[in-house]
Length: 135
Image (tube, rainbow, N blue to C red; front, side, top):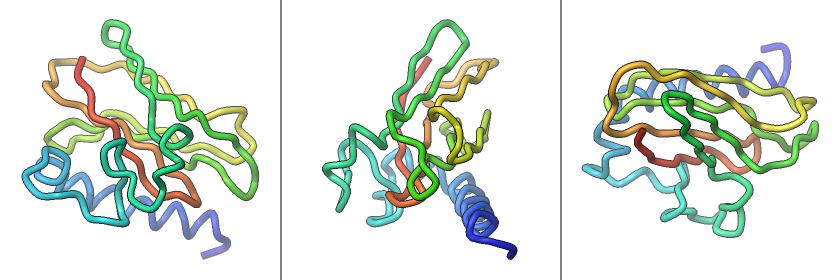
């Protein structure tokens, strides 16, 4: 790996793949989310004071989904990625950010009906955060 960014991208891609395979049971509550790996509003773990700046905020207008993470973007601390995932683990959209981006906002057009969707936000220091919603 050339640098830390490549390492983070590779690590996140592997985690996202594993998450997509296990998403229906892990996200749907059939099995508790692993502690110290994925955080939610209800389960912020050691990052309880970070919910407001790390939990993805979802805005739905028709079939347009906007995901925003109210988090500063600097070289040392930033949101790396947003992902939109169905309850079946299908990735409907993904956006990778750079520390130099102004903010962490992504917009996706969702086709079809999905009873449950998940927005993820991954911070390079405070791990992966997940918010559940529906259209």
